Length: 340
Image (cartoon, rainbow, N blue to C red; front, side, top):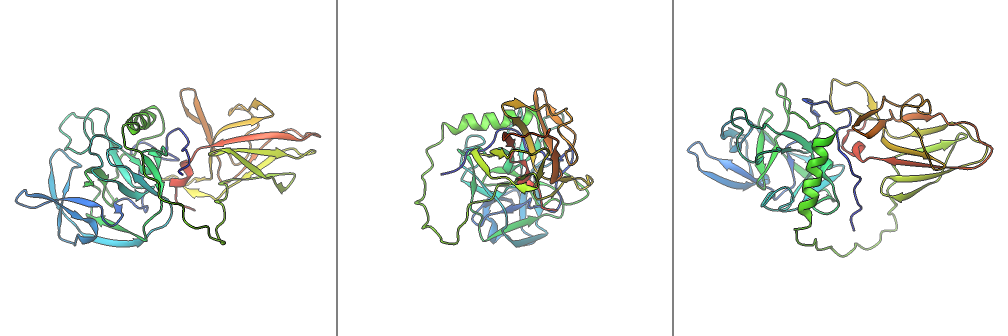
């Protein structure tokens, strides 16, 4: 059974016009069908693992369809989260079949026109969204990564069709791809995709694998320390953690694995993104002095606010002789960033 995904957008440290170099754009699971286009204009499909350098694929970044030769096809060991986008999840027949990509794969979304056609003069150019930004536990799901990804490198940043879905090729300088920032537009795309999910056939669940004696539960993305000691976290809901702070404690330390900003020019480090902090039923104001060293400035869209940590941040809580309840609500945005 898949966990419900947190609501919101995914753009940790990403500014509009920026992109995430060095991650797995243009990487696909074996079996993914890539649309090809010959020099004479004959269109076809080839499974990604059968592509060779010099083969020409259909690309759609500009106003015309192009037959672009492949510079290199690489196989890389799969690591991290994989995302399965079910057939028809984004639009009718898009993808044409389930599409499995890394969490950082960039999908082109457009507000007014289909994403799988060339962009004419004055038309909506669309923006790119990491696959992990669209997770909804129904039609866009976490999945087991294949043993390896197949990376299609065209020698330039471009858009190709993978299972009929507009997807970035391996990103190359000097042509960055515009990544959709967190906010209203991305949430609207998430809501549209979620509304389509009801029309999809129920996902057949595979029988659970036999239990492994070595298997351990996935650790929480954050560690809370009070009075210098770790506090047990209870996950009340996905990414909603309750910490029972001991008596005679004051400021609380939030530690997590530091990650790089998606924009290479941004030298900051990011830990987790906190969307709500509640102390004994009192919501802490993100603008208050409770958010001490290690917190980045507050960001938001309308009434929706959040604050990133740098991986080692302090909640400056007053000393209390009594136990307290601290509730932290996180986003899953950190999952798409590379570890520092």
